[in-house]
Image (cartoon, rainbow, N blue to C red; front, side, top):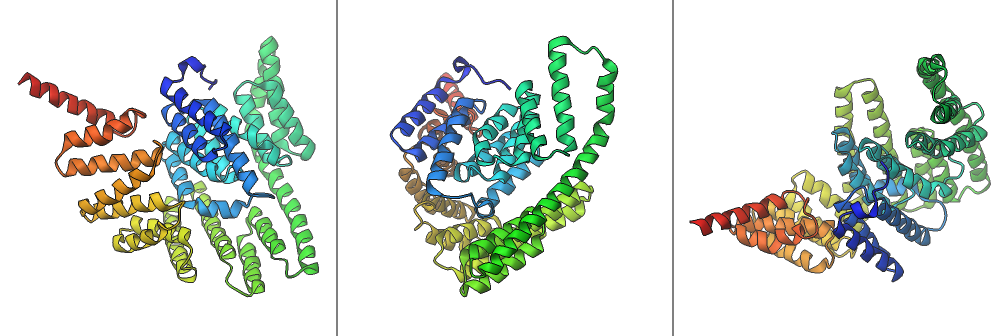
Length: 467
């Protein structure tokens, strides 16, 4: 997908984008990112808005976090959204997965799991340029990661940027001289260059490339596994030496756990963090979160294996077991850390999803004291009241939430839509449309079914006038 010319971008999207640029100039990154995401909601192919969004999120993140990003912690914090993105991918909803990935990357723009979700969603949506754009912006933070560079090469190849694709594959081969996949990809890219210049002069060689593809893929996987095991074992040994010299350094133990995670040695990683928890001499909530994330990663690996074997029954059972673990883990951590309002919010969502409405309301009433979670907490309190058919209480919570969201972002649209739905439920369809749905319609004509609701009202008015 080539970038859309400026004149093909909807006017409203361009206006919102300009507001975002102005916010960047005024050093208001949160509002700027709200605007860029709003522009992308109108036009997902607006690459300029996506590029600005990513650049602002990376700068905001790196200014606030010195040192390498904590992949495990950010994965745990965004776990429910990430899992929702994976489900959207599996069920053929790549644009929905792309939106979830953008929300994750706004908070953790250098998390490779979130980058992978965005890339997969973009490719499924036939927008490889979106994936490539993100990789180009984050590559400097992963200069020695051959997986990132190889992925960029495949996307350059797919988008016919053949010379740059060759450069990527050459870089990978310098890092891993025996990488069969990179060697084959380089040959394919060079062959494509030749074809682009001169056309295929040797059809037999093309058939040979195709014939060897399966064998090359098998060799690539074997080679990748061998290199990964060798490299990770060396790094693990080096980190253990550091721990022997400084046994009370918890950062070393966390680093060792992360190395085990990368090597998918989840039990070893868990044991290392258990030792770190004992070494700390007190309950460390960060270590608890990391230990929970390891267990979730372990479940994901087993689910992936079951899916690869077409064992859907086992995969579904593991998914249920994973969800039960997440719920119980968050519940137990809420008991251990009752003042952690973010944890209260997460627990409330899990209870809401299970239909434990009164319990969820209790958690959200506490979590609304967290400024970052206040509006969402009010929204979920209202959703609980709606489930309980306590519509007047729900209206109060939603009106309060709407008054505190000054910009028309996704959250504001969700709140207004629920207000409209409640007003409809109470029997005043015209008020629902005029007061709530129209406000959404003016900035996002494609949001849910607001367009049809507005058309329905106009149709009724014409019918009444005619009669």
